[in-house]
Image (tube, rainbow, N blue to C red; front, side, top):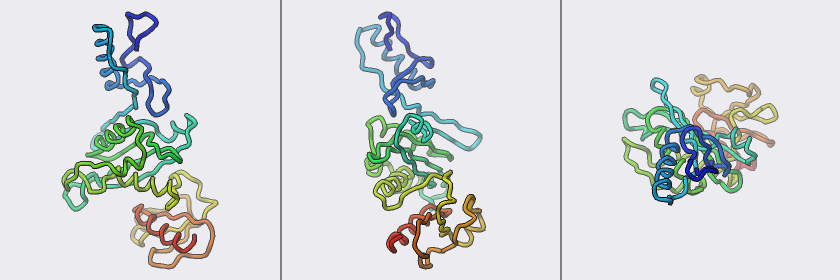
Length: 254
């Protein structure tokens, strides 16, 4: 924060900060980093000493009418632009126990480094509880945590406030399965043309949502045997159907 002039400090929305996910420097025009570094600069100016400025992660959130969206750390696009080898998982889960009245869905995306599992960022869209999940990920990345650390976090739980397996846990579990090769993931915008796509959804789910980008998909409900050999992609509306279908097909050698 100290400039070439020892009596002038660069802090606030227009200053550059160390950026945690990449280790580089960037401008983060947010009140959080501006206030924290302003406090440290004032302390150093007054006493000649202070703790070092923390790395920023760009954690931010916005509400548009009744919907909430937010981000912390790197998006997948930003991570790829920075030259990182990354993967991402998307999960949809309720912000608290589904059997408790008022549960609302959160669409949660977790970005992590391929191989190490280091968490680089997250994005979330929903209603209540989006801020809580982003704060968890921001804290985790502050300590260079991995998807394995995330899967083991002990978070506050009671039906009105969350689930025994929180959305961030579910994302971490899926990321672990991806890294371990148990259920490898593709991104939603992938070209499905080269793959044989297996739609394992229930009939009512098929009617509810058309499968875009895969007119060649084969409809095989979960209780039917897997088809012949080849490379297969499992698609479904609730993602746990895809996990179950993937497990069954893997057990049969696909």
